[in-house]
Length: 178
Image (cartoon, rainbow, N blue to C red):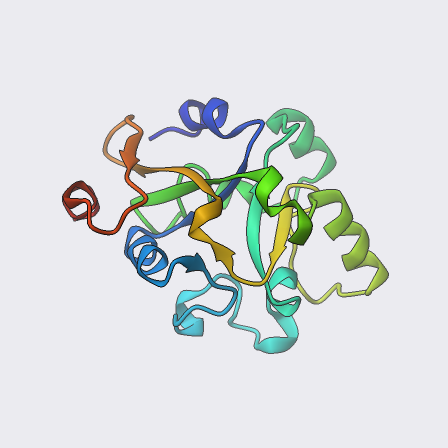
């Protein structure tokens, strides 16, 4: 999947992206957890230890992409060192990814917007912890599956959005995630 094909689908919405194997775990647990049972070596930016964990993780939150008013060209100019392209359409070291759309209205009581998160990061002088300025939002606590609007799988080898059921018992999940 090419980045320019997925961006129109992502723009204007709130998302979490994950590996397909982790998606199955999310469905089983019923939530996206701030501290899932994943070794640090498999998590993004954990090689430097706790003092360099991603900022959202230090807050006990789940990292989300807030593409509400996202223009990639403008964003690249304002935030040239942002790592957003590392994840879109899928993590660079994976060949596929699941994108989960989050119901913004439902999660709003525990959501820190991208701009507010950046302001908090600066106020906390948390410069040793990474953040994707403006487009990374945080949901504080475990984000329940009931807040998921939809999910789809993208794969490197094709340009299709493969819709995924949000029910762990649906057999097409296994077929698509193999």
